Every structure is written in structure tokens, then in C-alpha cells.
Length: 107
Image 1 (cartoon, rainbow, N blue to C red):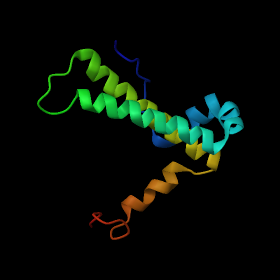
Image 2 (image 1 turned 180 degrees about the horizontal axis):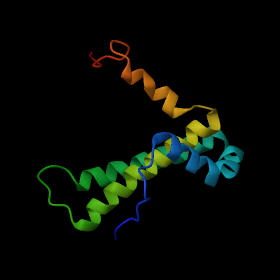
Image 3 (image 1 turned 90 degrees about the vertical axis):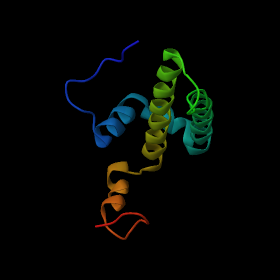
């Protein structure tokens, strides 16, 4: 199954806003603790999908598609956590653009 694409690339800011627009009312009622548990569950599903796609294995097209889906789910739940805790992820990741601020970031 091919996922439909938007006509323009989705930015980090745009994705966080999309998740906020669609899910904030429900997510904020659930709260950070319960939402973190759901994010953790998604990490488990990603781990399972990664295991099926390890080097040396020959994953099926379905397993490859599932891996992509699980990465997207983890990212969506991370956006949810940021939204309900008031973190702007676009602003937060800027630290990776500043040489010397984060280990491994060079000029």
C-alpha cells in the first residue's frame, strides 16, 4: 500500500501542528503519564518491526511497510507528548545546529 503524499513536504512544525489540530483535545485530557505509556507501547512495536528488518534477514514487503508505519507512529506520539507538555519541537531541535552545543555537532 502506498501512502498518499501532500503536494509540499511536511515540516517538523507542520507535523506537530497537524497532530495538535487532530488530537490535542483527547490527548490533553489523557495527560502526559498515560500518553507516555502509549508512546512506550509504540516503541515496543517499532522494536518488533526493526527485528524483522535486521541486516542478514530478508524482510517481506509487508514487514518493510510495517517498519515505516511504526516509525511514523512513534514520531506522531512524540509530537503528542510535546504538544501536551508545551514543547515546540522545531525550537527544541535547533540545538543540533549550534556547533559545540551537542557532542558530535561540528562546524
